[in-house]
Image 1 (spheres, helix red, strand yellow):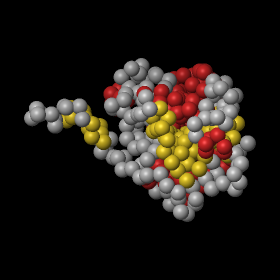
Image 2: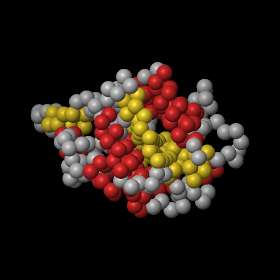
Image 3: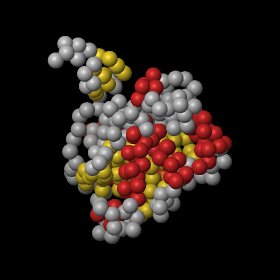
Image 4: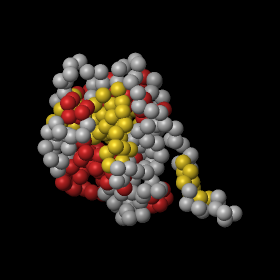
Length: 303
């Protein structure tokens, strides 16, 4: 073996390192836990394969049902992690989705997109779109997954994500607006502390998204899309920002740009003062995290 094979050729702390032999070492978000039935809430979870070709999977969450024929909203959730770390199987996301599904009484599909740097962007966008189409294929009740066939109200489908996942959720809603999604209606979009660029270069994004046009790429900087934001394919948007988050201003700018674009829906921005990026995931028991979850749950249950 080449004595230099363990040399680090790229490093993006605290996310990952790439070694000379091509090996990728993730420095966070590597722990996983299996699906389960939560003993406190009765929320069930299971893992499914969306595409064997692309090794695309998801974790599904089903709340405790009041009747065998109950129909509930569907939440398609995209996890954060700088497009490169964490997964639906990470303890932090499994626990969050279990709690949210219980609080909001919704069914959730938590998408495991292929991650950078092994799979540079736009792979995460493409994988998420494939997962959304997979979920939509159940609209007539004859898809491969019984939970979706039997219990989803496909007139109340929501997209949501945090950080990089919020970026992917926004771009997915844009694609719905441009391309459509069969008979499925995307009712709303929830963006929690969204990762968007402004006019400042970002070395990580330059590395993991080499085909991007840079700071003015509307996938990374939606504000640069201007009037094209009017094509957003949902009827309402809820944006959360955190007072100490370096991304706060970008989330607020997105909200303002969306309102000015001519988009026909309704938008709201909610700031959590005194908190940092993704605080609700790292400290879910705090009162502000509980308030954020209640706000999301209320949004998912509005007609």
